[in-house]
Image (cartoon, rainbow, N blue to C red; front, side):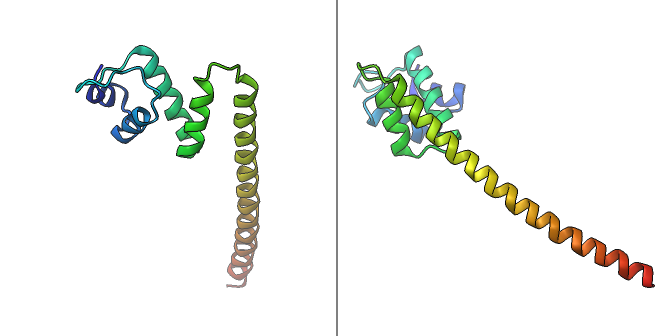
Length: 120
């Protein structure tokens, strides 16, 4: 499958396809019309997932290099994912605190509006 076909069929942005190739992680050759194999598409799916959950380019590259390493990197990759999960949960908790504050302020204003309406 060509780069354009992968872009169209799987909706993978061309910049990610080019970046993937620049990392040297794909099995496509250096011919004028590179062809992606099934394992390339699977790797690209992982890259897209990592990017969707907020991994930076460098974090994604590091994770993919570990994935393709000949060493056993399961624990290291799990640590990376777990750390990112903790960070994401912290962000969610911070946002929940913000929502709680907003809801409190809204409640106070709505209560004040009801009091004013009763006076009328």
